[in-house]
Length: 98
Image 1 (cartoon, rainbow, N blue to C red):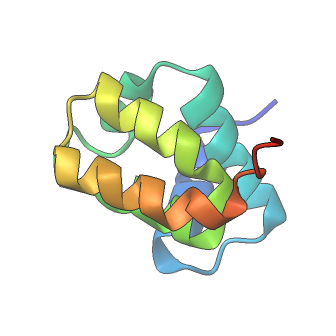
Image 2: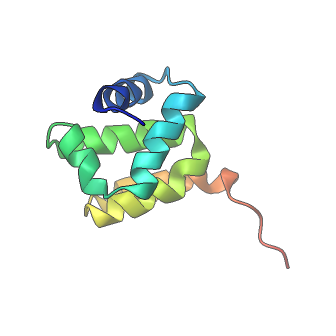
């Protein structure tokens, strides 16, 4: 069971760019499984904090780009940010077979 303190520590590590695989996994799970509004609440109801967290997550783990894009769209964040996250993750997506 992940406690709120565990989540806070994971969020802080991702934001600082020092997250280990466990912290990245916890943040990915919150973004993927939970309502993205949970991020908003956990980060003090600050939209910019959510934006920074999602961008930091994608920079640490480009495979999380799709999750960040979906969360950003759900929270109606700036389209330019969402597009930037998609570009950051482009190299991590599997190539389409022809």
